[in-house]
Structure formats: structure tokens, C-alpha cells
Length: 140
Image (tube, rainbow, N blue to C red; front, side, top):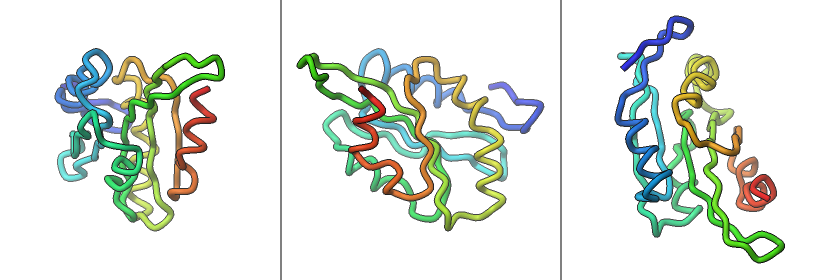
């Protein structure tokens, strides 16, 4: 576990381990990460089973609290190839606390760098900004 001098944020080892399992073994469909503000650490909040849907994923993000998440998105290209891309989602709803938004924003790049293999980043402040159509268009 390493602390970051600029934001003072540590990343729990489990975050990286579970991400590797999602990337290499496809053990999970998605992972939701939460900053534990009292201990200034990013932790795993929820693991999505491989058979869970994108709707299950978006339902796992609280309506008025910030989160980070990764989602393993399967899609078919125009050439009919099956592909998948790992999305990093920075969820920062308008209704969340300003202090929380600032904390998630200042720690995001560092945390994302810990997750080696993320291919697309998506920032959303409300559910319409991370609709399935948007995800599809960003994946192709």
C-alpha cells in the first residue's frame, strides 16, 4: 500500500488484485470502488458477477455519492467481431458533497494509473452521461 504525496490517498491492495482478476480471468463484470475518507484510502465496495448486466452496474452506483468503477464491456464490432473493453468510470453526481467531489477528482488520475489495462475513461455526473449508448459509442 502506497500513499500518494499530492492527495495523501492510499490504494488498498485488494483494488489492484480484484482488477487483475477482472482483466485476466474475467472473474467479475464490474468493480465499484469507494474512498474511505476517514482513512484516506480507496477500497473495493462491490464486485459484480460475470453474468450481471450494465443495468446492474449502474444501479450499484449511489445516486448522491461519488465512486470510481471499472466495467468489462462486451460488444460486437461492425465487422461482427466479439470484443471487450475495460471502462474506468468516474462517477461524481451533481448532488454529492463538494468536498467529496474534490477528493475524488484530485485522486482519480493516480488511482486510474494503478489499474493497468483500463482502455476507456468515462466521467459522469448523472446517469444519462453513462448510458449504454454512450458506452457503446466510446468502445467502438
